[in-house]
Figure (cartoon, helix red, strand yellow):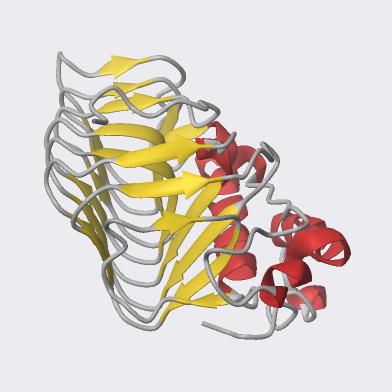
Amino acid sequence: MSTNPFRSIAPIGNEDSARRKILLRVAAAATGGLLVAAAFASPAVANPSPISVNLGSASNYSVLAAAAATIPGSTLPGEVGAGAAITDDANTVYGSTKHAVNDAATQQALADARATFTALAGLTAGNTLTGADLGGQTLVPGVYHSVAALAATSAVTFDAKGDSSAYFIIQSDAALNTTASTSMVLLGGAQASHIFWVVEGAATLGASSSFVGTVLSDAAVTVGASVHFAGSAISVIAAVTLDADVFGPVSTTSVPPCQT
């Protein structure tokens, strides 16, 4: 991933209109917070100025896939859209629109998601994650980067230090994998809607776990059985696969039900 926060923002003249709008939002926010994230050296120091992220129309989706979406038995309060087939069953519960395959709204949402992925992937990280396992760690607001695959084998805590406007951006140049039955904890006003996992590789969440935030993956997203997911699963290039999972609104400030 780029270490220059403007590398994906500067050449906007050749982008489509949706991409230009989102990159301009991020560029405008940079003077008020995006660069500040690089000022602190360790996860123990809070970000003094919040990042601002806008997913555009993609923010309305629980599941958004450039390829197929497989969602049997899942509860989805947000919209569902895919560039290929959407496979559900009688136990799939929709709280909003199930879009026709590759309709105009889905295409727009995917364009917004791709632009946001590029912009967030280009942010300068103030924290380099040298260990592959986030389990047992407490993250404070800011931009984190790992060149290797990330894992969570035990609870991960997000502590906003009393700032409910704070953002957490976790970049991985490879995959993201969480172990079965792991949990994520929100403290100090941290919000699931302000946590973004920007993943170059596949994202795979273990069964019976809890997860918070928006996954923006440049590969497939696979969610194991009975996961409680406070956020959105978005693949900007591939498929999203669920297995009887329960999604909560990304705006929630509480942990998913199975968190311990």
